[in-house]
Image (cartoon, rainbow, N blue to C red):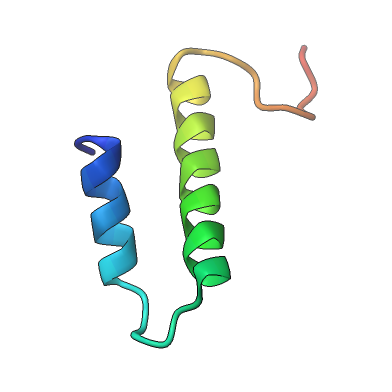
Length: 53
């Protein structure tokens, strides 16, 4: 994906017009955590809580 600003814009555009600040912050938090996890896996790091064998 592009910049954080563009990702934020796209995330907000997918929310309903009735979305609250809490809804927006939750969606951005979840998106950030997913992207961090994907980057860790791509870099070869073990996901938190996995068996490191």
